[in-house]
Image (cartoon, rainbow, N blue to C red; front, side, top):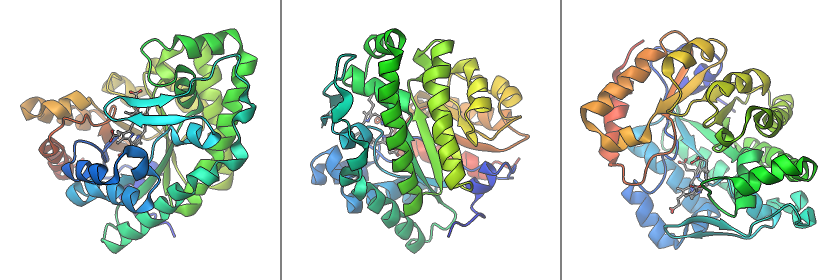
Length: 350
Ligand code: 1CP
């Protein structure tokens, strides 16, 4: 049973809490020596993701150090393309590589009916992580399940990995929208299923990562970011009305307002380019917000870091707010810098 008294769940229900709840995107990962040790032992990233014992252990690692208000499932947004049948590799130090699709590809091989053959271990990780959180006494920490949003996952499927320009995926979406819609529809169905199963396994919050929403023009942002996100939010809310959804439309700028109003998400994550005063006035007035420390500030440390943390905390005094980064922890970040931020947040009273 879900405990509604966890601070972050109260915040996501719209309550202003005295102490600001916090977690950090990519809080589990390469900046932690205990992660690097486990990765060396497991022999690769996907061997950790699809091994519930390893993955749940990694999810717990940052919680044991810093007692965040939320743990986030250790997995990746690219398990969906892999489960659909697309070839995926994580080469050490190089990031993900996929066998790229293009506008002429026959999409028939992508099969949403069979994804659990690959994804079952991820659901086991969710359950095992809930058990460990309880057993280790982290009864204030909620578990976040997640997926990439259809647009962002599609960028990797079409570009074959990360990209600087997004020309391939944008050309397809702009030039052959009907065929591109087929790909997005496959991703909507799969993502809905994947997230429902995470919730059934014990996830208490869902975050949708739209890391590349910021590369689209307004008309296409509406079509490929807002619409698919709204379809997922509508489906999840109809089945699990108590599970809050946090959307993270990175780089969306002022289009975040449309995103907040039209998608049906419960809370919005801000990237670090978003001005706090604009966000407090236009976004926090209508829904809980989460954000938005620059990860490079966390890497830098010192007095600059203190000032940046206070600036954010002071900017969102009136309504529901969750402290986070504006993107993921950078792997060279000293863990002590994370501790420095946590100390400020824990002693900050609003
Ligand atoms: O050890 C390693 O070399 C693997 C590095 C790594 C990690 C730790 C990757 C490869 N993925 C992850 C875990 C991960 N990815 C988590 C769970 C851990 C946590 O947050 O604590 C989550 C939520 C993600 C989400 C993710 N993966 C996103 C969305 C968030 C974001 O960073 O914008 C994206 C875009 C990915 C793709 C991906 N996976 C891995 C890398 C290096 C990338 C980015 C590639 C690129 O730069 O385009």
